[in-house]
Length: 304
Image (cartoon, rainbow, N blue to C red; front, side, top):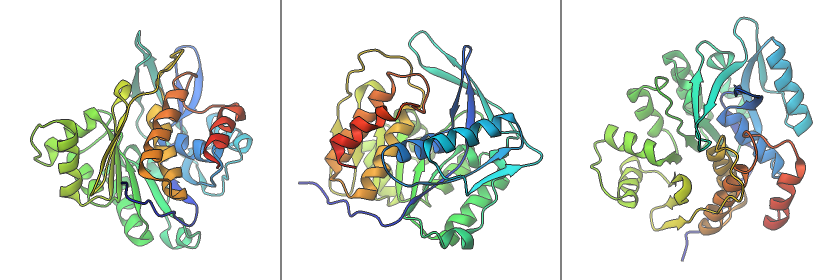
């Protein structure tokens, strides 16, 4: 048996950074929240993307891409002082990325108005951890979430040196669902004083300590796990016929999990579909597919 996942009413509010990932041979749009919003739109949902870009050429590139994808830019802010976010990305021989994240980017200064956004009646709030990398941004987001009073999907992205243990512990205590990878589980478990154990036991101990509805644990080439109060589900990895890179695979996983929460998919289906979609993304460059046909196959299979 599996716990039913009741569907959520309203559009998901996606909060956080949009970036230009600059690879040695190309530049692509990225940033975990932007990627999640992009995928949700491609899969037929209507996400509300809240971010901030500079008044620069990179910002115009972001706007043009959002128009092509049909993503609303009504909550995309323009910053007169700070540039659109940029990350330098280098890939190793196996396509695993290493990120050089620049400081003082427009997304560090997102303006948040809970009263304005409450009127939009979002179903949930998705947020990562990178946009809260400064103390000022962290405090703004925490206060905003409390006023907004919506369930929170936290997608941890612990990139050294851009995270702080005390802030992460506060984030963990203000979310409903948590998604993290195997390395992040080890870091967070250590923060919370949870001893080293096998992965399911450690993840379940974390979920119980934080009183979370569900924990989603990605395992790279070993698939993923979903842990709830009554079940532990595991989905094996889906083979990638032609691996290009793993950039954005975790964001693809998160987007499908959110879609499943919105539509009330059973837990097993939600997990399997998230793993399938993340694997498919590894067969193309970057984290934001430009071809609508990439999504059409999944929309047809999933009835969305």
